Amino acid sequence: QVQLVESGGGLVQPGGSLRLSCAASRSIVSINAMGWYRQAPGKERELVALIISDGRTNYGDSAKGRFTISRDNARNTVYLQMNSLKPEDTAVYYCYGFLFRTGVKYDYWGQGTQVTVSS
Image 1 (cartoon, helix red, strand yellow):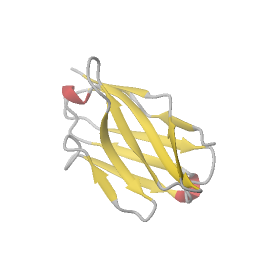
Image 2 (tube, rainbow, N blue to C red):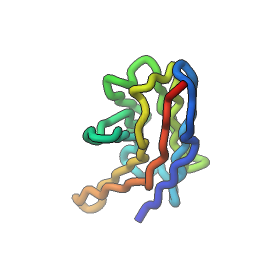
Image 3 (tube, rainbow, N blue to C red):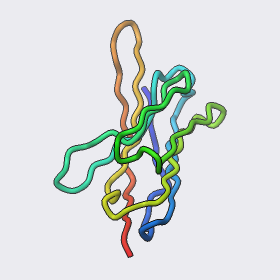
């Protein structure tokens, strides 16, 4: 079992920056991938960014060139640096992780943190 706790959300003006953090309750070294999804009102949850255990990253189209995902294994934490924020980035951002164990995939989600981009 893995608990994920997000922090760092809030209100920011267009063009501003935020850094989200996701702290895991256990070592993330053995977690196959961790990342971020977001869900805006009336829309489906969408991928923002993933980071694989080997360091490879995968970004959703909306995040490419503006957001950067990173991980600190010593702190069991994954970060999402968001720059050049736009009003359309407003959403609840969820931390996500998955791991495989004996052929079974386990998904884990945080409770979400609100990001609002508005002047």
